[in-house]
Length: 118
Length: 143
Image 1: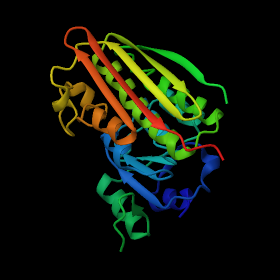
Image 2: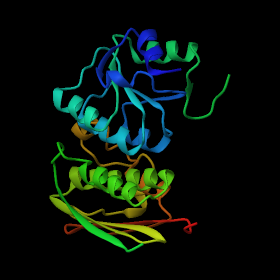
Image 3: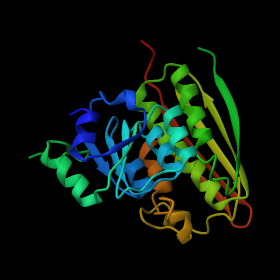
């Protein structure tokens, strides 16, 4: 699916890189532990998280994460959004919980980074 | 290609710029045309090592050397040192305070993540003086 599909499924608001909504996403990883993201995510996946600090953007950058969804309307500050914009990492925010966010995206065909297939 | 060398200076507790050195290193590797999967491994290992300095040490520095054969990173810090390196290498072992965990780090994956992504890793530490972490990644022969 593409990022605009994810935006629509989650009724999300785009905080950075609106122009990148055509990016392709096939895999997702969700965590609030950035070291877990560094250890277990794969390149070009979606990160779903409740953390909103600048380290999330740095983590996404070094782990080559394509885009980030913040859950439960947790919004990063303007410096974090600016860093994401500079690093060309789209940011979205949804009102949904982590569980509902993952559930809805899974139902629509998005799969994990860890290879479990259905 | 000629070797590329350089150094980044790191300041403890400077969370605003935490990760900036690894980000710059990633850019340098991209500029040299290093394959993307290797860049990802180097960037992840460097970022974990950089975060360790920011979290635990007063200051530190990250030296890098890039040759045609390998990428070598050495991170030296003026920190508390690691009393038991073997324990620190175990996934999940951490002495980080709660405020670090709330930032998404300090889950005891730092050194294991560096090991996971590097071809060689050595850790030397003196309690009360500091820690030196040195790792390298091999590069495939040029075509």
